[in-house]
Length: 273
Image 1: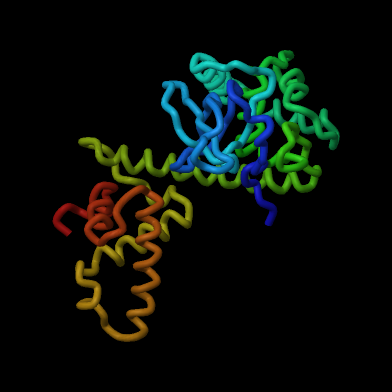
Image 2: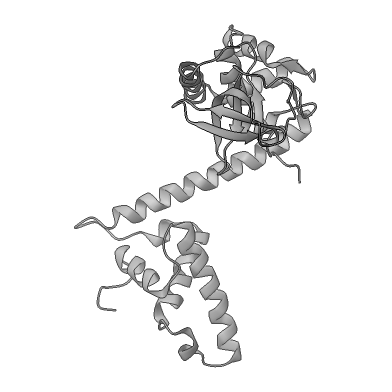
């Protein structure tokens, strides 16, 4: 399978000078934006970077994801402005925008400034960073890649590869949307006077999930006390595993008590069962 992981792991020591705006991963692995405030004197190939609240962190060079082009002498207000531009682009850009860009580039690697001009008719650093956040989104990673680790440019993926990755992405998004809708239907059952969940209207996978919950709910909390023989054990263990996994996907504890509570909530079981 083709990976759609991060587009690059750059080595950009020369570019990351004081006053440059950089995107990096922090100590917890989260993306952040900040301004380089110099080389850290105590750690090799590391920099002092200040975020939008002027809080300083030591960031190893390997954690840099992008040196934003088109801006030097950046301040904390620039951090907020660039984050805002990126958030706006992610909220307002349509999927078709990236797919049209993919068709337009026709295999050529282009710098971020050109990508920004194509997307926004503006090659400023604000739009360069906004373009980067779009390119590094799940759909962007399916369509584009970085030609080499330290390049501040991107190239479209081969058409067949991009189509396969988009298909995987669309399937994953559809699955997540279906799960969110199921959670909403389950939550609605908790309201006073609400109708029970219509299991017959649910898909086969969901019905199997509730069947597994019933087997888990029928067992005592001490699973070992409920074993009836090797064949029964094997069937119960399979149902137990399926039920626990189903509970986890619904954001609930994977326990018999949780299974029973859910079955009562959606109206499959009566409160006194």
